[in-house]
Length: 139
Ligand code: 5GP
Ligand code: ZN
Image 1 (cartoon, rainbow, N blue to C red):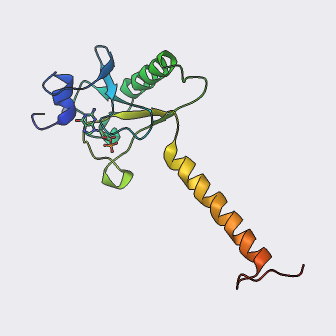
Image 2 (image 1 turned 45 degrees about the vertical axis):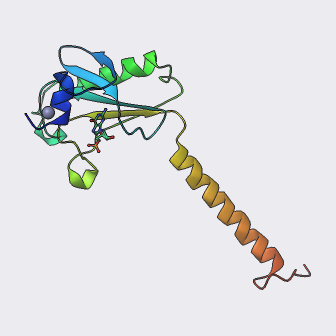
Image 3 (image 1 turned 90 degrees about the horizontal axis):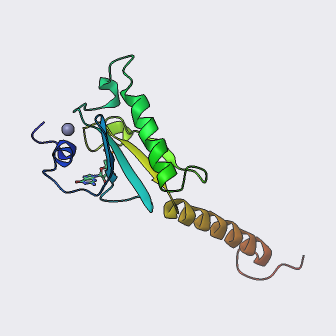
């Protein structure tokens, strides 16, 4: 596919920080990482989405094996990581060359959400102690 970013990366026509490659797949660091570790595992063949993999094809299995190996190499296999595929626009897919995400490390998004929830809970508690108008209740 001439207009496909990932085909161009695979062919070496666009730069990418590759971490792994074999005869079926290439893996490289995401250009806009959602976490300290964010790797894309991409099959060499141009398949637009997960829906386009024929039944019985072992490609997906291979992509899982590549993810497992990279997670081990980066030392996060035991601590944990996420492995997922976005499918079509409604599933968040932006690049229409099949790829899996391997994400691990500090999830700052989740961290800030947790801080916000804890903050809101404490604030509500404080208001209930003080009373809605800010005056302290007797008990
Ligand atoms: P999707 O949303 O399609 O599942 O994920 C596409 C991913 O590709 C995004 O996380 C985005 O940051 C990444 N990406 C888009 N263009 C490039 C690029 O040119 N190089 C690299 N390394 N990653 C890219
Ligand atoms: Zn492609």
